[in-house]
Length: 291
Image (cartoon, rainbow, N blue to C red; front, side):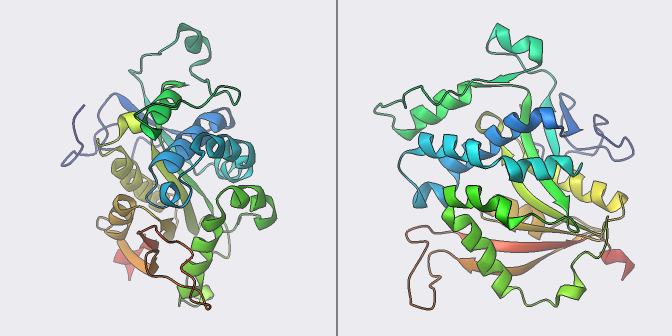
């Protein structure tokens, strides 16, 4: 499977045929549905628990427990975005099931909290691989979003924020550092501002440029639906690069940012130590050429 750099937008396996993607023919972009909830959560949570440049440093122990805890407590966040109709996934149409019993339902997740964590000389990588092998479904990458007029309910977010306490702090800091006047960007109605939340690609499909291709397709898709802008918070350099350097005719701008290695609260406490990652809030202007 080759990288997608330099690929043209010719793949018509997309929700809107007038907006083809640059993905190879084997991949299809679909609007995510409620039946995909468990798969979506598995991809995002597995990626974050085992490979995030922030979470793996802040929460290095009991990763499998953390993964199952996030699966139990994170449903509201993912359900909200799927119900919006604005979340999309990349499906591998040539996917080969690992287990025969997965085929009748189109795929299955086999995670079981009662199974003991793998202990070996390979450490967390062995456990990550074990859990990845139990993700037997054709969904390989996701881009989660919701309409800005339909904001997340912070009360319902509390269970997830307890699993990853620093998650809420990152968003709070980026908001405090955001110097824009709310009326210059916030949605006042449907179809104005797209809020991007989670971007993850399954570990066995990384390195192919799938995330970037899906992101650029989504920018065009949102523009086609009439959205004037997309906001995304990023704690990953690759994600920040794609959205911060949006391809013309769109324009990406870093609105606020901070380095977890140096940020300190009013008491001088370095809350993110020893994580070293620049977190960014990015705005993509989808109407830049109209100015």
